[in-house]
Image (tube, rainbow, N blue to C red):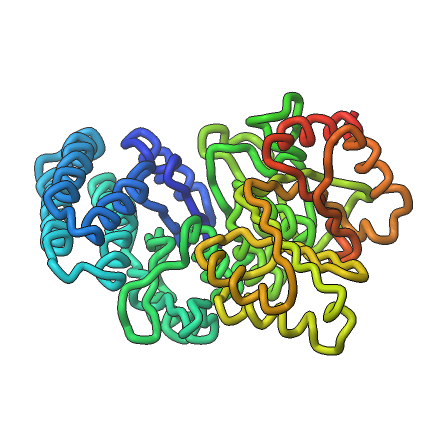
Length: 439
């Protein structure tokens, strides 16, 4: 079985770190599939360029492109030492920045061109890494993600198609490193598309599932999943092992180390996922598997940018089909719901994507009065089978008795207790919960 290892933007963010990626890749059982993100800062720059081009500000977009190109012109001679390799590296830059220049000047720049612009980061990082491997005499081959990674009409990966297209690209006799791009794919029209931000984790998990890998490794700049946000709370600790169910809850509700969707393919085929630190490869990290080892709340995560919506309608709430009609509004606008609570006269729910909020609010007003609270945060506490462990909810509520709680969700998932608080109380909530739960 072939192992899949993914390195994020900070892990390939400098020539020195890219060299470290090669070293870590060679320590894996060969052959191995190496999934790379774009060099740190690149995707943000490409997003900005695409936004400017969409607004018709093409000259400004080209100026931003020039700034990014200067960064890469310094990157190549630091990464590649031999003159022939440097020429190869500069040829890669000429190819992709030349294509970027053409795209950003198009008067009819739209969503198709935007996706092509965003894809250039991963194409650059993988081709430069392949050039470095070639210079070092490392047996390595590019495995273009655009040749096998597919999504359906709804933007969801087609794992059967991915498996069918990927396997013929792998040679049974090859012993070395396959290098492929995270994040990018093709849609049903055959156009370049992507798995959305953070999608390189998803790519690695999908490839791991397609190949029935023995393990998927996600290498970042953090030593595994912590029991709270180390940027906000002192004395957090990494979790040595955690179940798929617990990790999925934490990833969805704010644990930045892992893309929320990346657990699902691995869980389906029972493929362990290991979270490791490129800067501290000796650290144990976190192993995510089907095994649940401990009772109680294992970790806390926070998800910002939440909007709470309350529909109050004493006349209609208890009528048959009322909730169905409410949910249909969100379905029509393809807006997922995170939390939901109901009472005799009202239903409250939360969304994390306010793109269609005005239209959603207008549609909901036909059912009753609508109240909207923005700048909310979901605090998620995850643990295996929490619903059957008495006292867990009381423990959390006691910790937050001095703070206003907008919503409470407990029982919808067996592994999750979620609370909604105004975002200005997020830091205090995380610290109070940590003290109460982890001492």
